[in-house]
Image 1 (cartoon, one colour):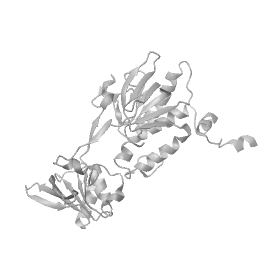
Image 2 (cartoon, helix red, strand yellow):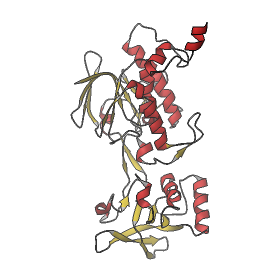
Image 3 (spheres, rainbow, N blue to C red):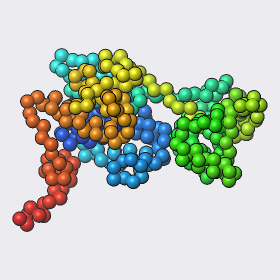
Image 4 (cartoon, rainbow, N blue to C red):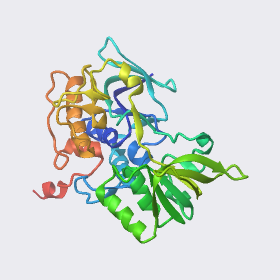
Length: 350
């Protein structure tokens, strides 16, 4: 049984920053995530996608953001339990919580923070016979390493941001890129659509309206050709090496839906003072939560994590005033962060 102050469910940006905010207040955290590495959607879905709205960082790649957050929380030595899901959660008589994961790791936690993003998410799969034989070989639902597509003939399916982003990202790495979407209407950012059309006009990539209706294999069993049926009903053959499918995600709360928390559709209802759920001692931050005016932004999740940390500190230390201390000037904060007092020389001179 692992005993800890707080268990954080989710190792995305908000879950990682929650470690930092708790650490500043002297609270120890363990982090659980279903993915095999920290980062959540940032590393799983768009590791090289630029992010422009992180304060003080004009532009930051998604993977870079996770690396920076991991560096930031090093002084607090969080323990990660990856590749496992919380399958059991129950409240204990001592006001703490018992948790068990799919790998039978057991925890006794004094508080819980759910930072699970959209929950356990699964990609919407291509519904064509035989596709399952090719997944992660020549059919991909995510791009883990762009270099494996270098020099290949690529077909990208989808009309959202992920499809457009990867088509644009790979067009100068791949031998060729063809984007296929069922219509001329896109859900992607207008600037990305405009850039795609510009590249098509320059013959640097292609766009086709249609749907994939058949996969054809070579003698070696690898995917060599797809059949695309256009809006005109005509079926055309298209040779390729790799097929990238971006039809979106199915967000699923999984076991979280059975924990007795008040839900708003697929999100957990919280207050805006503590970001506590309907179950005292369980908090939720980031995309998983809901309150009036909620905006699904990473920077909003960071704010939520800070307030949740103060609420948890107060809960775990009843009757004690939780003082706000600044990392700039507080010796306690400097000690917890493992940094030297930046004003030491001035104090000595005085």
